[in-house]
Length: 248
Image (cartoon, rainbow, N blue to C red; front, top):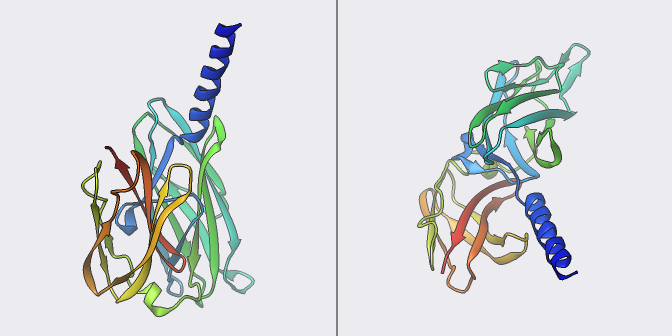
C-alpha cells in the first residue's frame, strides 16, 4: 500500500510539472528580444496604404519535436468603405499566408526556433485595428501563448515614440543578490518595475523614473529565496518581461 501511495505522489508531481512548464517561448525581436508573456499587448502605428510588420521569435524549448500552430484573430479591422479596409496576415517560418488564412502550423525540433512575422496592410485612411495571435502545441492545446497587436491605439505620444527602444537581459544571471537591467528610452517617463515569482505572485513592485537615453535598473534580490522569477517593466499597454534565476 505504501509503494502505491508513493507512486501516486510521483505521478502527480510529474503531471503537475508537465502542466506548469511550457514548451513555447516567444521573444519580441522588434522590442530588444524581450520575452513575451501570455496576454501581452503591443502598440503599432500604421501609415495609409502601407504594411506595418512586427517580428517575433518562437522557440521550442523542450527536447522533443513539436508541431506548433499559430491562429490569427482579427478582432477589429479598420474599414473605410466596402473593399477599402485593413488586412492582417502573417509569415510563419519561410511561408507567408494570405489575409484569408487564419491558422497554420510548422514542425520545430527540440531547442530550435522559427520567426513569426505579423503584418497589417493599412486601408487608404489610418484607423484602429486589433489583431490577436495564439501559438500553441498541437499535441497540448493548453500549452499556449497569446498576444495582441493594437494598431493606432489612442495612447499618449510618450508611449508611442520609441519608449522601449532597447532592453538588455538581467545580469548577472543567475544571481545571489543584486542584478541589473539596461534600458534605453526615447523620452523621459515613469515605468512600473515588478518582480514576479514562478507562481505568478508579485514579490516586489515600484515606480522608476527613466530619462532619455540609457538607464540602469537595479533589482533588489537579497531577500528573495532561490528560484525562477520574471521581471516586468511596464508603461500603459506596453510591457517588457525578462527572466532571472536567484541561486543562493
